Length: 347
Image 1 (cartoon, helix red, strand yellow):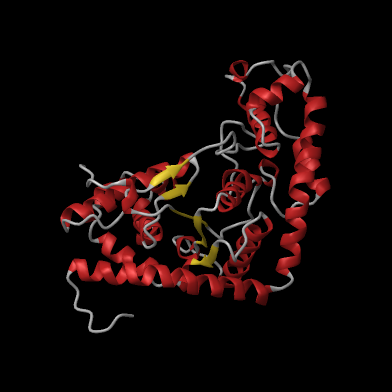
Image 2: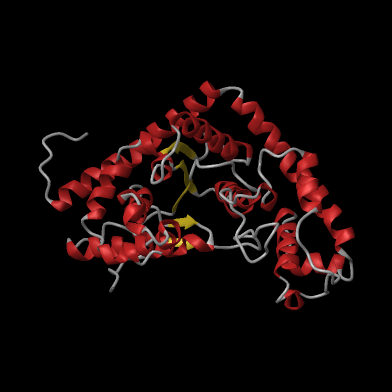
């Protein structure tokens, strides 16, 4: 699809990203998302970070547990360095632009686009007709999440890159169909040594909060002893660590642990291998465990403190939603005007 011409000055730099409140957050969420979110905030870029509770209900959620997990994700954002005064932090369902713009995009996007989404195929499985319509339309809502604020950049893991490409297609088709240069063509931000953190039990699979085995991941709520035990039991091979990154090819479990060490220490994998070249995992794993505990311990402690004050978390999310609505409401009203809706009042 041909994209509309736009100049870099057309849209101010604005970052948006979100995390689902479904299951405990992991080291993968921290290294692949939360840590990078805080870095972007500290670069002075306008940042909006969302707990995407509407996405969570594409599969059934226990209401009480959903509320608890929404607060837990918000606590993780804050404990990882997101300052609610410098970034906008809120939960998706409190800002109406997400759902209203998603309906407009449902009428712009093509059904074939949705069926091609790899994540829908993975989650729906063989019995896709039994899946919710929301699961199929998930990428349209994701596009609305981003474009409701005219976000120009989205930090994402590699597995979400296809959804950003679809967001770009929706923005381009809207601009083309209505002959406007209204939405930016959002760019994904995929960077760093651990943008995709792998399972501790299988270095070929992504670390996931939905994995049946708790030993496959490090949860942000794990205490120091649990973290050390999981790393000690992480799957490895019998070979010592090499002195160069290329030699890790074909050794997914070793490569995964080296990349985790690199990301936690803000170094490259090559630097880590220079330090540990020739070391057996009996030496490397304790060093990795100590590093993980040192980095994650303060985050876990702050999350625990915040979770003791649910009213404080709710107030933070409410204030963030007001700020988010102040940005998105005028954009949504402009969309309605472009599409041809009669709006006797601006709401």
